View 1: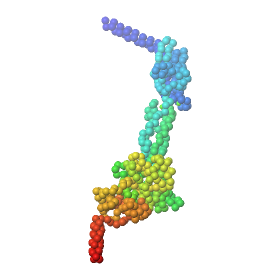
View 2 (view 1 turned 180 degrees about the vertical axis):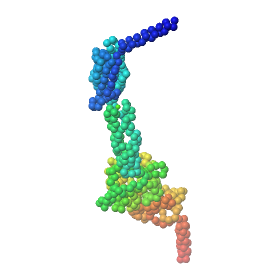
View 3 (view 1 turned 120 degrees about the horizontal axis):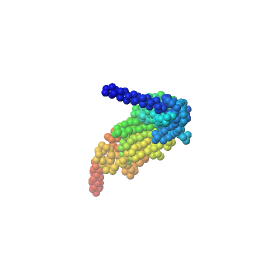
View 4 (view 1 turned 135 degrees about the vertical axis):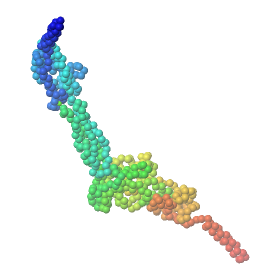
Length: 479
Ligand SMILES: [Ca+2]
Ligand SMILES: [Ca+2]
């Protein structure tokens, strides 16, 4: 019984082995060599990896069709076919379809369908190939505006990364490179990148380095003596700022390509705007009180600094106020001219040393070709009644002044003898500080006729009575 079982087992095993050998011997064809020149290529006729070669060798003689299939399983192109071949050698695909058009970027499957003489068929779709004719994308990461307080510019940092749809992150190069010193004004950062297919891209980024400082500007290195002046040429826009104290910022913008003129002893310094509390001279208008709002000093104290192009000064929140400046000889001058508009081009047409003002409904904008001390202010008529706000100097009575000293002559009828003196007075000659203005009375302008008072009236009355009594006595004596 055991012998029979063993014999049966050996028989079954032998049968299985024989049949297996038969199957193997009968054999399915296989691919012995499968070489691709690249798994990615770029059919764009730039001479770089414009096609791919597919090198095959089969284990036996087969009939074969070599196709390219797209991701939708559609036939793109038949590359090769043969009824009987073992080694077809390299076959090229140039990226075109049956209509000889280059197919879009993407993934394509190499389909090898081969059958041996016994009819054993194999469909091989193991290899994919990628077409990539797209360059990477460059992304600029960083600010496009850089503030500096140096006339030399500033070193800027940025990152321009390049990402390719096929290769992922690839390297990029920029000129000037990140970390370079960039001068004032606009600069083009030119970046480029390419993927391993040499798909190349160049992208430009425009950056702006601008000068803005709340410190004084030192142009000493730009100074040149010319025609009895000091001159400084600036090629870029410069902005000086000052804190108005209420959150507002005064801006003084000197435009690019401007020549700045100063006297021979000018050291090249232009002071940033500062809010002052004492004016060198204050506005004056006969019959009005002036209420100075802001005193802003900018330029170089005591020096006449002028500009070939118009400088723009913004005094925020001062809309509706008058504006003026203190001239080099210490006189107050109102800037009464309104600017045509708020543009550089128009206001560059201002005459030498000229100025105008522009009210944008919120701020006062001064366009000027000189820098000095600027004031915003209002005028209010001096009222007829006694001002209860003692010490302000407002509301001085025309007829009954409550303060000692000379009175102000308001019209020829009140002080006929002084008309000539009044008209010859300079409206802008009152040189008092705002502190003085506030603590003192209103500006005083001559037309002094003396002091009137109730004591004087009584004295006149007494004199009249005495004269009458004297006349009566004299008459009686004569009688
Ligand atoms: Ca190419
Ligand atoms: Ca690419």
